[in-house]
Length: 529
Image 1: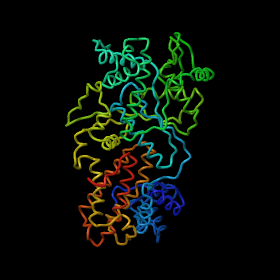
Image 2: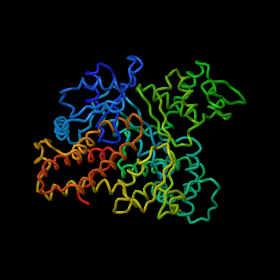
Image 3: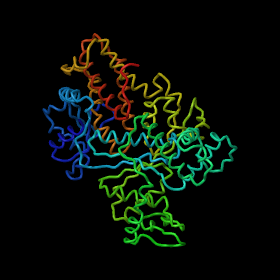
């Protein structure tokens, strides 16, 4: 709708404009400050220019009213125009707000947690944000591939093998175990130890020469747990890339960096000149023991990404990786690629409360809060929704008890109740959405028309949310339109009123907007509460 209106106004004014949405809908559905930008050129006040420009919109079918207000030109859409857009949208069902296919190919990498244990609640935030960005982007027509980078190389794998051996010694062999300061813990290791016993026998737990074998076995089992936990909240990946498998390309990658003069040797280590691209210090890529560092793995991975020739690369990383961005972008430039094609989104940590008090961590889970535990406690829908109520680079705190409330304090309940309420009204009227498709909006009151307008804003809300990588715009929209539904229901008699079928047609469009928006958040709207 907003694109159509903007294009129409620009054709009449013969110039590009900025089109805004007034907060007070009594002032109109849209407004443009174009008169202010013309003031210097025309040497007239914005108020006078706006008055002149308004005359160009006499007898236009799209607008009920065009006014000059304090230098702005404000537009109120006509009943007929809103009705035509409503009818076109209702035919689309889940294709409503869908964009035309774009040429831009995007590789979106997110989660990429070490396969050393189940996902904790911090991982969930990046997982849900990434999955929702992908869903919304695809709906808008972008070609998006999703990817999980499996960090299955390095010291954490050695530590995983050791941790599993110790878990086996304690739970299977019943030995007294003294755990070192650093090791992975949690009941998942005892479960994996049982699988190890079935596969390899008990002796492997005391055989240090086979700890790498244990690590590989555990890595695959943990990855299965991670995949299952993500699937339970509606997240699937197109591709998994193993860090270990990429190291075979290190010599080839290193030769490119050497050719471009970006490496040097010092203290028997090999360094990359990342300070040339704004890093605080140069970084080690090969240790003095000749083993490539974690950064080297990321350099190989980004070369692999760029070689696959996407137009845009989006990474979602934890906030603790903030300082890592510069060195990775420096390496991309040294490899001869355009680092501006890489966009890094940071995901802040989450604080959970229960009844106003900090949520107690589970020893069973290894002193972390498991994503799967929270999903079971409040449900996948509530988990997904609350994680999208703030932009992922800001702090998020929420109380689990509120998300179990069956009232307006629980945002996902409030929105689902609006959708279910619409379905309930149709049931009471003994009508279906199809029964009211042909109803006219003639003489429809302004509050009902504003509901139509608000519903038709969804395409522009989705585009803005995707462009700004801010899914909070969708959750805010859903809360706002649900509030409008509840207010309208309380203020107007719907069943057996003269306007009954007109109101039902309006509400069918609202229901469509809620259903589509929730679906793009990975949530199915509830028809009955």
